Structure formats: structure tokens, C-alpha cells
Length: 223
Image (cartoon, rainbow, N blue to C red):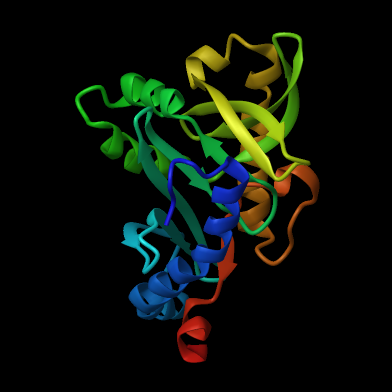
């Protein structure tokens, strides 16, 4: 359970422990779909869902299934007086924290008629995959992440275990920032690399934001 008095590092640690329950839920729900797709499917199949664990932690997730690879991208959310906060947890790299005002900015830009929770679902369904690199923003070092709908920017905190996203630009706005627009190529390269070399992984910052590679059928059998 997440409570408002917890620090960001305490929340991230709790989520890393809880994420295994999300993985098990996904495995039980989608392992047959994975098996069928690996046998006779084509391309990449993407599914989205939600799950609340026994510890009352609320998650939204994306499952990407190809004929050679399955990846789960889990994002937890919780509510305080400031609004909805979100954390994406990945197998490699830091946890990524999205502040309420960043989520609200995304909502205003892409789905102004939706509530914030609906905006969160849409945001994660479209932007679960991230390509990150250090960039300078307004004269200070920043971690920038290119996603489908634009760019997140944040501070690297707590000995590198957390990125605190404080800014979001959509693609047209990011194109006006020389440090950001070239990152579209980085995202495209990373996706191409993953599609053509599914068992190999790049190193460093480019490796962040790639979820949890899993074999759902094996997870179910091991339970």
C-alpha cells in the first residue's frame, strides 16, 4: 500500500517488490494468447489492462507480444491532494516518476475531454516504450526520454535510482528544441534494433524503459 507520507524512493522500492504480482496476473491472463501468437501469428500484438494487487497498489500495464518476444510494461499510480502520481518500473534503469502537473499537461494536450485517470491510461498505452539520454535543458543537466507522443524531461535523483519527470513536450513543441528533435532517430533506432535483434540488447541509457521481457507460459507453469 502506498501512503502520502512515503518518500519517492520508498514508493519505488515498494513497487519493485509488488511488480512480480502484476507479472503473474499478466501471465495468467495472456499466456494462451502468447502461445497462439508464437505459433501462427504475425507482427506485434499489444494488449492493455489494469490490476490491483493484494497490497492495494493500482497498476496499468501494456503487454507487447511478438512471435519471438513478450514484454510487460507496468505503471503504478496513486492519488494525493496534488493529483494522480505515476511510476513506471522497468527491469533495467531507474524508476520513472511522473508528477501530477506533467500528467495534467499531457491530458490537456491530447485528451482534454477525459479525466486524469483516463489520460493516464492513454498516455501509458501509447508511450510505454522510452529511449532516454542525458541532455542539457535550460542550462542544467537533464534526462530526456523520447516517446511516441513527444518527450519527457526530468532530473536524475537518488544515486541514479529515480528519474523525476518535470516537463513534457509534444512532438511539434519538441521539434523546436535542438537537443530533443534528434532523439526521434534514437527511438526509431531502438525499436528497429529490438525488432531485428530480439535477443540482443543495447547498453547504457538506451536500454532504459524497455519493461520486463518475460515468457508468460513459463511463468504460469512455474507458479
